[in-house]
Image (cartoon, rainbow, N blue to C red):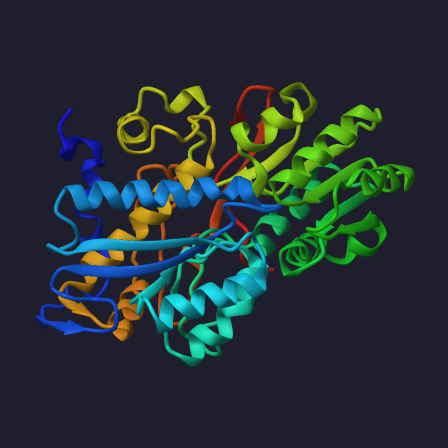
Length: 406
């Protein structure tokens, strides 16, 4: 297989569907951009309580290495500076300041986590540094009026939770719901979205909530307490380590609620297998990316391209870890925006292009889901599809759903 065959044919021209077209003013550069390179900065939890997400950063390194091997972006190599913040906001602030002030990056890309991104959002916006395609679905990233330099990527947690709320309302109208959530904006967005999805039934249907801190050793006591509430339905809004613990504990204590699990913790390799696949059978989530363990994709060109790329450029990554699909797809989005920016590599133009995406199709997005942004809409992905874990993979069901609106 040639290098050109590794990228989906449709993605090669992806930037052509970005509104605004190419910027041809040669040599217009901001910090971190030259005739030879484009510097991007990134923080990832390669260690600490959210270290399962480190696979995303490694996948992005691998994707950009492939792009560089193929000649770069309009002849410029991507210099991707990614550092370990351990999911610690103070560390994120320290690293981002260094990348902006010393490394002089053109932009930040896919920095991970709601608390870490919250800590740097003000700094990035005050200094007019693009904070592009953050790796968190908090609702706050779609705020172009007050934070014009920060843009999201994945569906918002509130949109996802609204989908669960509406599903419960329709299919489990007498449900007694318990919610386990991380005690920060990530977890609180899920509770807010669930309440919005349930509407005026929220106060009667939600019978118990428990939070956890990322410094907690386990969530065992919280799960036991929620079982004691008499709830027959559970929403777990947790990062991978704590999601796996919750799945295990729910099973081990013999509790059998209808269990809904946040999309950020659906990786078969990083969550379901460590939890014990048999313990997660029947869990419902919502997805927007093709699950690499789902056999329905195995013979598609898009999956085969991803698999070839994994084997050649990211061979240490797990083929059952959907974080590798996430990193691959997020990096493709960044490449499309860089291509659309042409030779006008200023921070202003980069932000303009990121906010001008029109129906961008990525190979590993679910069919029917595209990315679109505008000057007043910084939420690229707004649709998801429900799915249920069968002990081996996630089985999609129902239609692609938009969680926006009332």
